[in-house]
Length: 173
Image (cartoon, helix red, strand yellow):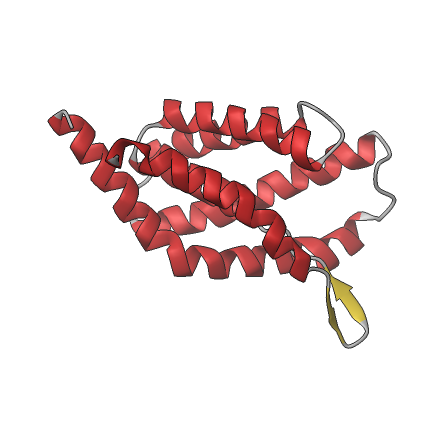
């Protein structure tokens, strides 16, 4: 049963993201702020860092394809971006220390990269009409804050789960 814990958590986070997106947009002083939960991406980064980057890329591909089919009309956008972010995170973490705080900061940076890629792709194919300044203040900053809170609350637990599974894998369980 323990071998299924990592994919089960990934699937659970996949289904929790739309539930938390129901709390968005948030209105503060008559301005709307959009928060995009990227819980699955955070978890995939922890898998790439502490468990196995190849598995994280595979999970990213499969769950990105499901995300494309389930949430948006363009098949292939997140199917490409989730594995790409996992790959970049694995490359970066090889160059720096694999400390929990470092991986948490890396997760926030990778979420920013994912949001920027999503925005640029949507603006190139004319799916969005907002300018970059509005995107930055009304979506990117609130998304970073919300996901940073998620990372602080669950990052250490993700590390423990993925490292524990890694050591069990090494022992042959």
